[in-house]
Length: 88
Image 1: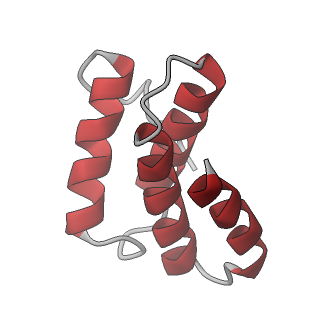
Image 2 (image 1 turned 60 degrees about the vertical axis):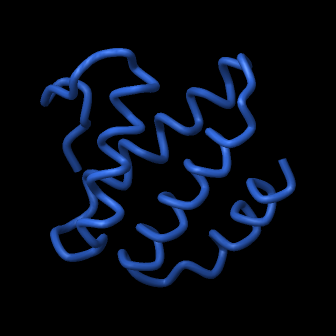
Image 3 (image 1 turned 90 degrees about the vertical axis):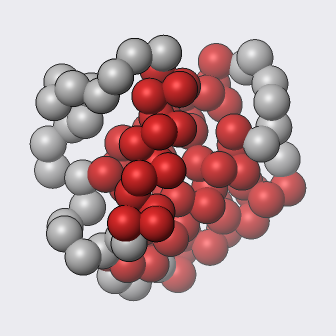
């Protein structure tokens, strides 16, 4: 969608982990909002959510992290485990 494309443009301007956290959080939500069965869209949302969760502590707020975990579990259809969240 258009929002996803705008987030892709905005990533060139992300200068710190907090900005990357915001970008990944909102981009993942924009992808989920598309409500499509496209595997590429689903995988991109999973990737952004996983990458959000491995940013350094303090980069994202709890108000971003908890929904990201919930959305990731819903996308994967399973509870999160250390194997699901890559290490930085």
